[in-house]
Amino acid sequence: MKADLLRRYAQRSMADMVRGLDEHFPEGLFSLTHLFLEQRRHVLASVMQAVLDKHEQTYRRVWEESRKVVRYLRQADAPIPEVLRITAKHVLEEELVAELRRAGDAAALPERALRGVRGGALAGPRAGPDRGPPDHQTWRSGEPSTR
Figure 1: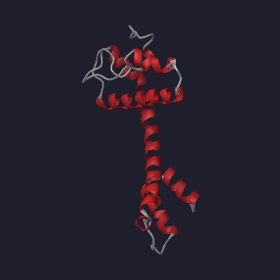
Figure 2: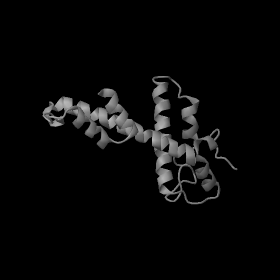
Figure 3: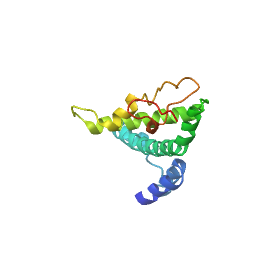
Figure 4: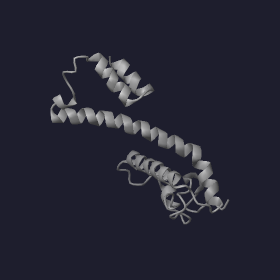
């Protein structure tokens, strides 16, 4: 049952997973509302985490596929579509937070985390309402790329 439900969720949709639950429990005697509030929240948190993890992978894939295009748009001083700006901001912020967490209580911040901060990776000098964050790999030692 567990393998079937996980397969349905991974390959299809949440609706198909719910249909699978109906197939495995045909009497329909129990639902999420029958659980105590704490357990209900635990189940919902698990489901939401899986959904968010899936979306996070999508954001990262979109950013990786569009990174070079964003770099070229910035170099041409052309507007960057809002969806790419939002995606870049989210992914780059997540990377920075992850680096800071890995650094823990270290006295010095890791160089990788500082690269984006020094260069203003999320709000570089050319960022604005019609432009997005630069590709954090185009910034070196706090200076924007002149390419």
